[in-house]
Image 1 (cartoon, rainbow, N blue to C red):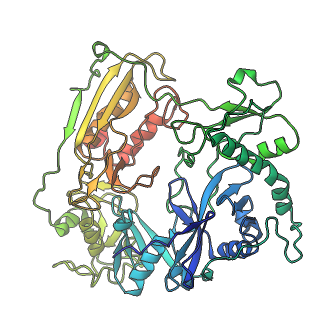
Image 2 (image 1 turned 60 degrees about the horizontal axis):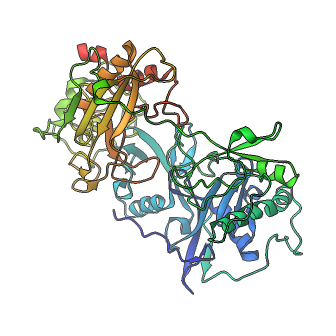
Image 3 (image 1 turned 30 degrees about the vertical axis):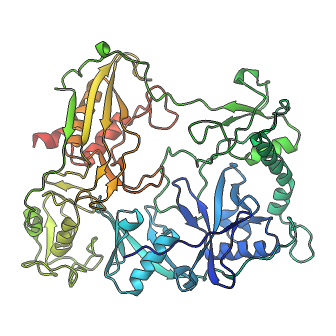
Length: 590
């Protein structure tokens, strides 16, 4: 299935315009923390277009058409979405698609999240799914779009190719997105009245009107400081934005926001501050911490949150402070101070390319762990979503000799029941390593292995202590995986994959539980379960090496990112994650 072309984007004063005299469907989108463009609903897009026709440099109060978006305002001049209560800024864009595509027909494809709510797919994915649906394809592989998911239209479900987890999906009809032809005419400046040219009197517009001057002054200050002209003398304490807190998304991202993610990186000029140290802040003056959002170079804080803007507008002093930087690495350690970990043989483990063995017959693997059920109950098979008393949803799609589509089996330990043909399909679509994982309770049958690329794992003791473990030394783990070519078990065989951020350093306390975690991590590494190839949650890059559901602590001397110490529950949590992957001391002894 080929990927549909992206909407044509021609920047004109920050707004995209379709070619002259060509009809296009307009979809407004915002950039989330995973660098993915998320579409606003058709209703919101109609509202934005109506405001745009009145004033191409004005502001759009989203709460006027959607109660869930009350905190959000779009500034058309800077093409950013602004959240009033946190000050978070998100880029927005005006994208164009063919009128015959899904948005032009008002067709929305959604998946069911863990909370039971329905989440819309990104627009390019929605269009791809709709194209496959119209061509009556039985299934669709989304790996060409950078996602390891399979869509099954007969059962209306989405399956993660790595975890085998299934979610329901649905297709629904909604309002068609707005249609436009040619460019948008220029009109009066902000604010815009409903009919008389007077500003709107609703509370949100009054709030926007009262604070726009302050925010524009901050933006103007940033632009001045970006110019090569000599910097002016330091002004009195100015309002500064707090770091953006990821907003409650207008339409939830395709995966729920991951705790601990950094805010959106927005490169820009450094904004000078008259305060060099936090020690100079007068008593009683609120301190607004400023994060270095891009991780390097000049600090560019998010535009002032509503707290800072209102304090400034009221003439109250606001001071800038710098947020503390995470301590990622320990002090330098000489080679003579590096020691082996007691009770753990060796200091290094290497994994090579997977040796392709004769593929085990999927039917034989499934039958090894299942018992036939003569009279199945009248309930759903959670793989194909068809009733167990009827034939498998894979009938006609997958054929295996000796596996009739109506056969039902029960997994030995957990007792969950499925169509045999469904389990054969699930196994055939995975790593085919002789193991089987129950899609309901995640119980693992056999020894589960992963798709981790070749690399090296080193581990040793260093003479420094982690926060919260003052009386113990530290186990340092160093993972190193080079770039390479994807194998047959990966999302895009034959295609190059990247390996960003290697070598990666991780840390454990050198106590009994820490050494236990290390031994199990070594087992997980040898089974190729630590990393996999997929799409990065932080950068959105596809075909790259990513963590595989076993969390590591990569921050040595602090816990500002959520990946450091102190964290009293981390060792227990990672042991539970290892057990979920079939890696435990009990399993090793079995």
